[in-house]
Image 1 (cartoon, one colour):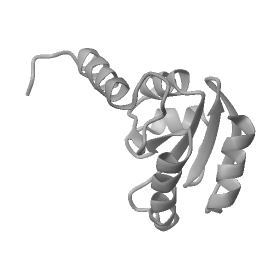
Image 2 (image 1 turned 60 degrees about the vertical axis):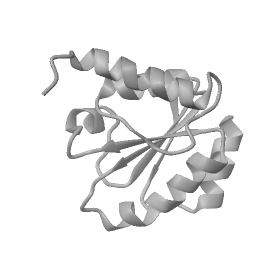
Image 3 (image 1 turned 180 degrees about the vertical axis):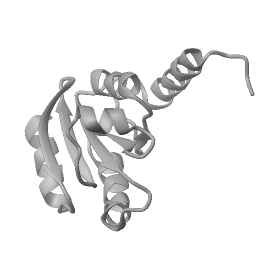
Length: 131
């Protein structure tokens, strides 16, 4: 294992992502976040963020994943993926009781929350409304 502190690794990853996407562009693919500080960083660095609270064992989560990939590539919103099994405290902080739960952040603040399977057109319209 590396002797580099985890915070320094996170900063390096964030800087690399920023360099790849440009300062104002949202990432073109979902970003996996681990912990409240990473989610907060993604939410503050992007005007609109769709956070997907999911679990690997969840069938609907697997079904919605390709749609979220498309949304990340086709919209100005960043898509953040939060594994609820690895981030139980963060999931509890956002009141996640079922997966998938999608939380839309605008200007760093949670503004919408959806539970279960969603329609791509509805999500895109929601993103555009807050974008």
